[in-house]
Image (cartoon, rainbow, N blue to C red; front, side, top):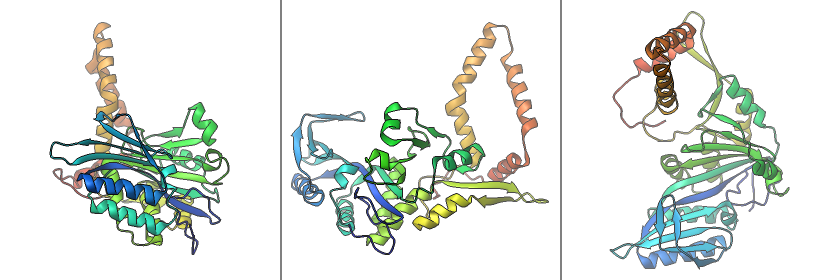
Length: 351
């Protein structure tokens, strides 16, 4: 892959870079519904473009679906399908990084994306990665920002406790939930690639609605620089790192963006983009959802315990609520006020 003008235009190559960074498409997964002859042609295009060979395998079960037909490539790609009553092929594809690395020309990859759009490919997972060869970004940057309340775009983070991941990647720092549609990993690619790629990697995994939004951004790229920008913008835009404070004498929140994150975005030439993923949730709505998903069961357990020990769950709960009111700051009050002023009945918008 030729790299020009400082751009890391290696979206599907794992051959390293002499530049400061590179970007790549690292995983592509989705479904398509095709007439049999067009499906066979697509299998041929996969073999030709990514220089790999598919062989028949036994039936396959994935994410609650059973497939009667299944092929696996030498580099780990999977294609599984069923034949519908109308004769069409209902197919599922999983193309991992090792398979995608077979395409060493960005223009060819862009052509493949165009082919998938022509046949109404529906992505269900897309992984994008940025390799930082300067290693200026560290997992401590993300961790300290989260501890200080300056991390935005994910609710949880931390180093992996998996012994296997530590052995393979040196470290893996997760941002987001593994069950969510948006998950980030930051790790030492040099260790994971046995020194082939001497870089720290920031990797974003998008599923379902997020993957469809990212796919529309990738599909708009017409040449290598545009594809690079589509990748880095899609990785950098959903998360941010800034400090919020109330301007003295006003109710206005001021944001101060953290220098290390702004420097990284300048390095990779990332710009903010809009990803359409449903109605915007205000901060207070996200807090309510977290209570519903994470706290309800705990409250029921406490109620059950207090009922058995002759305690009053209502009194205990009201005491907790009163303590919470005392700890409210002007930032909390402003967030509630902002959510109320901007409240509208649920509609689809972009963020």
